[in-house]
Length: 430
Image (cartoon, rainbow, N blue to C red; front, side, top):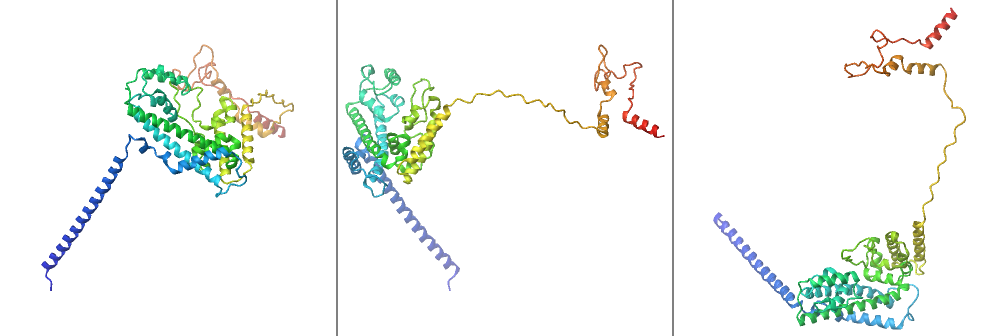
């Protein structure tokens, strides 16, 4: 039979075995974590931010090359092979349009990455430029045009930027703290600008192809905003299905750029408006009503995109109906309010009013009639102060009460007409 000491020793042996197993497991986990950290560091070190090819890889992918080649071939052929009717999921042209919408979003993201690369390199030369020129493509064009030139009066930026921004950039460049870039860094920056411009031209080809097929893929949306704007909206949103799921307030902002007024007035600038400001309806609307028209356009465009995404009306009749409603509402907004007509006076009532009479009304009038005492209390004699309940003009005033002769309150009791009439009748009967 095991004693108490033997059981204690057995428990201690089990605890020591458990502790050894836990220590071994912790060591294994620590080694695995170190291996993962070493692998991550190796990946980060392998990513060379000085090399443009390691940062931007979209142009070398087979997907990008195939889609751009198909788009160029389709633009050369034109609309001859465009199938009409209901869009099917297995239609190759429809599939190409969907791929183009997805590729346009990828190109936008790639341009943003290259823009960050250019800013990091060119910040040593002109750090203030990125706060003056916000759009990535405009920034790339300006950087390529300026290069390593320190005197911007020798650089012609006409056509690249508005005249007001050109003036601000020139003044800022004269006081900048930047220094000329080394030749290798400048060459990498120029190559990045060229790649960004190539991606932008490829994106324009993709949008041109989608625009040429918008009557086939989104007839109702094209009827409202036009084929060009419809293609830009679809390309920015990432496809017709994504555009249909988007609320109207976000559709209004698609394509909106961050504007730099450089200290000028904001009275004539249109903020919070994207591609919809390029539509014919928006341009023909008076400036005071353009924001209302833009909200209305965004709402109707969202409805038309939802109709097109479900192929509810391939003929485009719904879009034309929406466009007519928009024109009708804008015309209604521009109508002058109706002139205020003078309100005629009411016709006077020539008939005598019906007045209640009789014994009951006479009794009520006598009951609620003002008494002689109240009449005297409401009056004041000129030049004589009235007496009051508290004296010295305090409290409730007595008016002309008590001012008749003796100085005491005396009120003549008027005769009750009804009582006199009853008494007279009683005397007659007696």
